[in-house]
Length: 312
Length: 327
Image 1 (cartoon, each protein chain N blue to C red):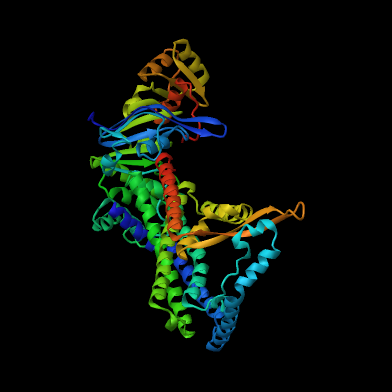
Image 2 (image 1 turned 180 degrees about the horizontal axis):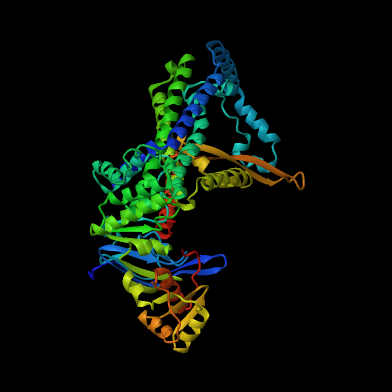
């Protein structure tokens, strides 16, 4: 099956037994990640992102459903396709007492990559100076870079980053975002899972939004944001009166301090025309663009789901 | 597969824990040699001559009177004891009864019995920590994103501790072997030993290597199941207390199935253990009359038992690793 998708899951389900009963981590997830570019996998903490990634990588067994990586069914054909996949699941995990170089050389030997590749990927991730230091002495940013270096040992077509900016300082966040963008531009597929909306919005071309283990929406980021009704913010002498006027005309408006907020307006001039007709003059008018955060919140509200966990 | 084993061996060599365990092993081996030296100091030629004289006299007495002693014993023994020919057996005295470890083989046997437990524990620890550290650091999941075939990963990670266990035993065997040989040589025991006796001593140390391999595999297999070094050690200690001390103490015949009994059988080329056979005393009501019965365990049956135990634990561990999620 070659449907142009790097990742495809259908009705994927995973439950965990806990002392208090059964907890559904993934509840029939249908995920489609197109090959090439950066794909955001967005959802609050506990929405099943990491579990889904772990199932794709064969670390966790699904209860039911199907998964395909580049058309190959997994986990059955995982050994054949794994060479095309690089993954960092949650925090980077290496042998703490070994140097970065030693960790990479063990992994390189395991997959039969030439030893020179270790030096190359350390160079690519700007770790060549610290390659001989113990992994335990690395900063979180360096650990992330080493994890990226490890994934590049295989020259993968699909890179999976699970919450890659967790715990990083602003410089580290910028660095990892740039890395993801660069990899996407090289023609690789980057699947980045995150609960940070701004992060996904900045780097992703396409996005899948999940909540409580289910897919809520998917598509191009621009399309998802554009699909939601936009609004305007106006500065008027009496926002409460202006809101009443617009409400009477069938628009959704409300006073917000010294400003007037109007939702669901496609054409901003309609606001100035209606208010002018009642001798209320607008001194400032700005369009309030939708962002992924509002899209996410609206989607969770529509589906009757609570956006549990921290979504920033 | 070979590549994976090579990688695991490289990791084994690079681990600090490996060198700590080997260092501990070397220290223990030196202590065993020192203990052997201290316990055989009295085996001077003069003492041995005196002991030989005592033995000659005792043996002559036994040759002359043992039939008579046996008859006297049976005459005075209770009726049920008369049915048991071993109850009044008069064993022939040996020189060793008079002078303890007076042969090369005995000196070696005593030092080996002091090292087998240490090799077993250290090789088990090496295997357990080798695998458990991967789970606790989370590197197992990283590893599986490079080699997802779990059975291959499992086998490679069990094979490396087998080699590590052999290395532990080799360090012990080398230091103890050379040290004890040196001690025995100082006492003139090596010159007295026949070629067959010397070969038997060498084979004893070789069998200790098999104990190292067994313990390394067992440690790694348990590490795969419990995924934590402390928990592995807890299981080892619990087994030692519950099985080796409590069960064996109360259930004598169960000793046949203890790991320690079978290890001794392998290392010592056969072993024996005693159980009590008790019957009510007809002359004193409510009193049990007990006699000790010796049971032998051969090298072959001990080795077969350990191989079965090892394969069973490894198979359960492999099954568990295949089925369980890796965090």
